Length: 292
Image 1 (cartoon, helix red, strand yellow):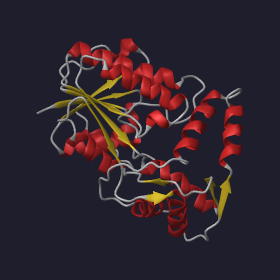
Image 2 (tube, helix red, strand yellow):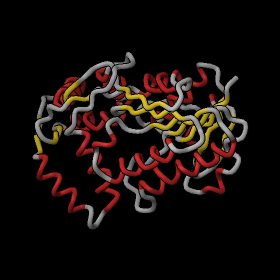
Image 3 (cartoon, helix red, strand yellow):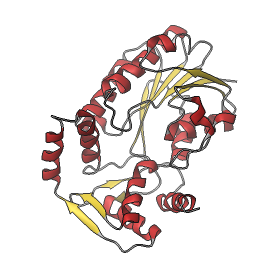
């Protein structure tokens, strides 16, 4: 039985990865700052995982001392750790770069077989602190002594839920024309892809979901699921970029995330297709659960 250390286990993808690892018969050890979160379902319907975990280590990726020995006896390490919402205390360099670097150092010391990192599709083309920190870690990982697999998904269904929330309120705001395409992927489909790729070595693999949609089509799907009339507002891309750059001077966390989402909504982000769960199915399930 192979043993896997999962970092980011309470996040959207991490929870699905734990479920998939359990399904495939792995021994699962998780790093968690707040283990109690594993007992509850996530806000985007990601599963509770407390009963699927074999071992828990309470640790903070930004604190190297708390990580000491965490990789001992493990075969693989999986990490999807990264900042997902603005923080005044920690930067992307603190978490996405240094936090993962701290974990990698432990993995090297323990001599693990494989280190899997969840990156971003076309990160090299996306401007801003978020992708810069992730790419810096990837560069470090490639020079490390541990065999690696870098997975680059286009986007998560949990991110697309923002469209659904706007549609519920009656209006969706799109950046630019809304004609750029993306094939986002459900967490369970991406988790299966990740676990099935532990046998790769020193590779970067791109992955997207089963259907390609423009951002306007995603918005229209959200309205169809809510039953509300389609109301769209197209915001000028150039104007928003100027606003986001101004934000940089008084709120760097919001600037960083603003730049990331501004870029991904105005780029073609279509990667090789994988999975079966359609976005509309996720939207309907999300609404049904929310309205219970």
